[in-house]
Image (cartoon, rainbow, N blue to C red; front, side):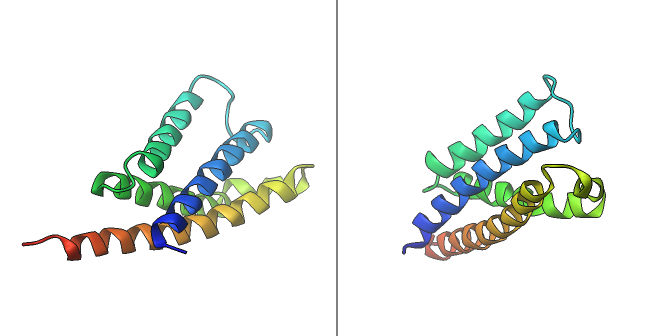
Length: 126
């Protein structure tokens, strides 16, 4: 499978997992359900545009790299503070599973996008 196809698939999976995770944060009480969530929607739209519209440009690859770092950071944030109390709730299994899946897809996406940026830099004539 080509690296660009793997990066697109990984980024789309990360976007879905991030949206599920944000929803779980609201349901489990880690975040409020108000208008401040529009910022999260805007971030996911930019991540989606970077993945689908600008994936052949340096800007798109940079956006995808930043999105992958955010996805990879979710388990770190929750495991270090907020996620401790979730083990007693009914949705704990799915919440923890999405954290693991975000960590995996985020790390893999960061590797793939960094590799694509590096390869793009190497191909550019000086």
